[in-house]
Image 1 (cartoon, rainbow, N blue to C red):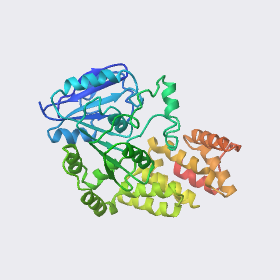
Image 2: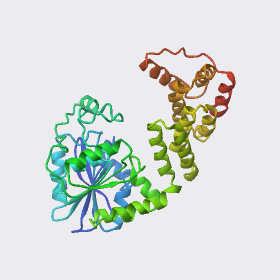
Image 3: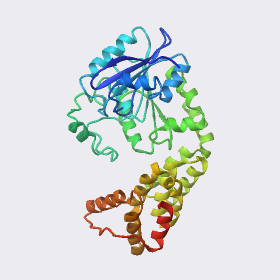
Length: 383
C-alpha cells in the first residue's frame, strides 16, 4: 500500500496524497460527502491510507496512477473560499503531470465545478449533481434542504458555476437515465461536451453495479487513461451479466416503486435478495412493496433477518412505520401501532408515524399496549 501524506489541511478541507509514481498522472478524487473528521493527521495515524480508500484509489494505484483525495469537513458542495487554497496546493503537487478528475454525486459536481481551475486534462464523473442552488434543482425531491442546509452552515452557493461557466469538453459522465440522476446528468450534458455513459438501472452508484458484475476495473482504467470508449460493447457486456445481479434488480425495483408499479417492484425485489445474500437494502424494499400490495405479514417475515441484527432493528422498524399509511385494514392498523409501542426501538418509529400523519393533516392516537394477531406476529419478529 502506498504511503499517504497530507498536502493541505485547512478548517474546511483537507487533501491526501498517495503518489508513489514520480512524473505519472494524478487522479484528483473529490469525496461525495462531508467526512466529519476533526483532524486529518489523527485519522491517518489510526488507519493510514485505509479509512478513505475508495475503489478508485485502489484501482488507480494498481495501474501506476497517483491519487490526490479532496475531503470536505461537511457536505458544502465545495463552495467555501478555502477551496482556492486547495486548488493551489493541488496544482503545486501535480505540476508537470497529467490531471484527471474523478468523483460521484457531490464529488462529481465538485470535479466539474472546479475543472478549469484545477487545469484538468479530462474527468470521469458518476451521477454528478448539476447544481447546489435550490431553485435550479427544485425538481429533485431527494434534496429538499440543499440550499437551506448550506444557509444553516453559513455557506452561500456563490461558486456554483457548473451550468453557467466555461465549456468542458473532455470527460465521461456515468449515470442511470431512469432515476433522478438522469435529469442532473442531462442538464450537464446539454451545457458541456462530455461523453455520456447511461447505465440503465445502475442507481445512484452505478460503479457498485459494475463491481458486482466484475467489469468495473477494466472499464474505469480505460476511461482514466482516456482510451477510445466503445459504448456499444460496454452496454452489451453489462446486459449479458446483469440478470443475476442483486444490485441491478434492486434498482429495477426502486424504479418500479417510483412509478407505483408495485407488483412489478415485488418481483424485482425478490430477485435482488435471491442473487445478493444478506442484502439489507433489497430486503427493505421487498418489505415495503409487500406492504404496498397488501401483504404486511409477508413483509414482516422478510424483515426477520434485519430484526435479528440489533444495528438494523431501527431501520426495519422505520420501514414498517413508513408503510403505516398504506395499510387499509383498521384492525391491522391498530395492532401495528400497539406492537410498535412494545418492541425495542418502537417509540421512535411511532414518533415517525405521528409526524408523517401530521404532515398530511391527520391525527393518530398512539396506543398504550400491544396485542392482536398482527401484533403477535410483530412481537415474534421484533421481540
